[in-house]
Length: 355
Image 1 (spheres, helix red, strand yellow):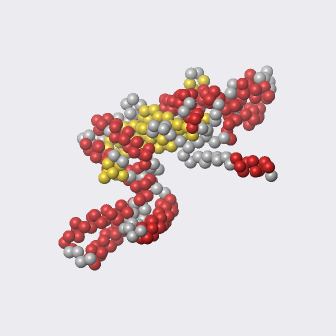
Image 2 (spheres, rainbow, N blue to C red):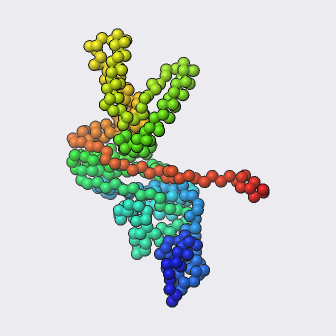
């Protein structure tokens, strides 16, 4: 029996892109013969699936599993090269197995998931064998899990196209209130699937990101006003800021002083200012927090009641249940998000070969 060295395993892995343990097993089974080891992997479909590594998998599906008592939920994004394969029953089964395995084993990342066992084999081998049968590059890209307790309810939603999934945790004052918030948590997840929040609160924004967004958003409104002016339509208010994180006590105090100065100039009696100032100040805050309403879940207008923010709607639901409730966390995964898809230019390819 030939000695199987780490260098031999590395060489085979480089040649086939097959998982390390499979390379070691192939070399052991073939007594260290490199070419026979490659055939061994090819015959079992392992090298075939792994060698697709240079192709882009930006299609696929989101898998969701929720505990029966709504104490935990897991999302898994499984990518494929084509939307056609994403509709394949074998692929759907693989997504279901992946999310169930991640949920059961509380895997925090893809590496941990692949190292778990299923039916006496590594999940990596189970997954790669399934990929080989399907015949296309398929990979698990992201995993997200939320875990609660008796006072925190977890629920989720996957859109009908299976490309968007959201899980939401709502923290309550008691187990009784939490159980009453199951449907609300799902509704918030549905809201997030459509409205694409990127963070929970405006407090989570990076200061530099807000600064970069400010100039661009103000410029967009100015250009819109140019067109509105040409059409002789009412102009939009041009904000100074885009997020509440910029609205310090000093900024709010100055805004209030400016409102009062304007009312004085208009000749409004000072005794009625207290009826006017709060509304105009609320309008100032609204005009100067557009980034929050677009990207921060708690600050978005709730799709089921646009007179309330999401935070206000959840608070109201908790109060109606006889307690208190607030969103503690959420995850939103969308298939292919952030992946740059390769666009083949057939004409350019032909031209290059003709040159």
